[in-house]
Image: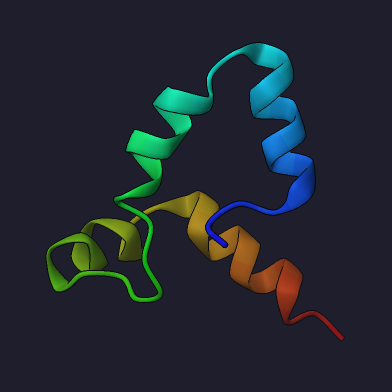
Length: 55
């Protein structure tokens, strides 16, 4: 399942199921090498890492 039940419910309520299905094709289990360098320089990604790994 690409989206969990809560995400599907919000998509249905907003009427964007078809759009979400199309966007979901770009979601995968790995970050492609071409995106890794870009993401490495994003502050938000670094903050999220710190939040997830705080004591």
